[in-house]
Image (cartoon, rainbow, N blue to C red; front, top):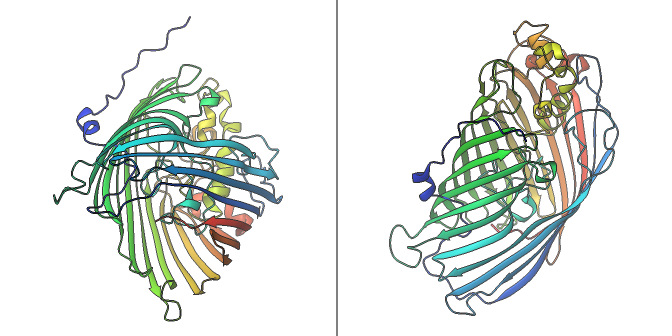
Length: 516
């Protein structure tokens, strides 16, 4: 039997691991007694989308413009013993997605992770139990979804249940899932100490499915995970998240990495009015044998990203509990990779459920990178057939970009919302086609259409949306429509010859009342 190659592994930073990990609760100094409870919550969505045709690869292949229909239904059951058993508290949750994915309009073209290629399926999301004592320590174990901060690295896709996630121009799909056993503690919770807002935990994970590994595809990924949060109030906190990951594919390739992620969330609103600020920054360092080259059978992983969101809600005299106007802006910087032949992999790829806009990242770059392996597989690229080319596909994720996305919304009444924004996207290094960069360009950058980039602007995207909703006893039913128009920039050389590219979707959804 072939022995796996010897490889140096990034060592887990144990001092950091001892002081960090994902936390599952918020702190409070004095709380009223909690009654025992059980409950069922559900969310559902059906949508139809269409995108105009555009060039995808140097051979002239154009994306389809068929109508794509998709669905997702999520059912969640929760149980909580509250304070019925004194200091001992038991909690549990079971949830799953049903019919999540594209029902009709799956593309028939060859490629990897193409937009609209995720066929509808039903998957378990959560099945965990937790025991805690006096709110100061607890143990949780089972199948869980993973989320941290704005969801740049770990994103559970559960936007329908979480009011702190943005929902303009976002259509979240099934997110990251892990088998996890976690210990958490908030030792000063019930004291007058200034540290009563500290909550720390440590966990061991077996990855079930995320953007980097899929157990059903033969990937084996294990993680040590840690986080430390400081809650200044229920709505204001800052923290650090750490992951050490050890992953192997069924062919013996490996990835080892350390991830450090800092985030902060300060919701300063009162009665739904005021300022809400969020920020997240991530640094990834590691080593991998994926996508080897003759000169570099292994690569260093050196990636970084920073994103922030600011939001201000203005109140309404007619309905003081709801905003009438919302101003919102996202900014982001995700490192790129200008050299395909060095030892470092520096292009940062955000989680696919961290979304910005309707056209550029989820459709245009999703299609172009998904087809990139068809030319990159030519043995002339490296003198031999390249490996692991499916990793070139972004699956529509925001990657290798500097973005500014200001938005504004008008909500004159509880049943109507009109919103829009303009996404400005720049490339710290242009999206590169492996074959044409190495062969036609002689190492000089060539875009995914095989042309020399004409600048750093990926494009300007103009997005608008409207929603009409009606409140029900347990949630809200909404009908909405969103549309986007992309004016390609010079970094996508020659794509502009197709004229502006447009996309639109209509959605019917049910959203439960969401917990802040």
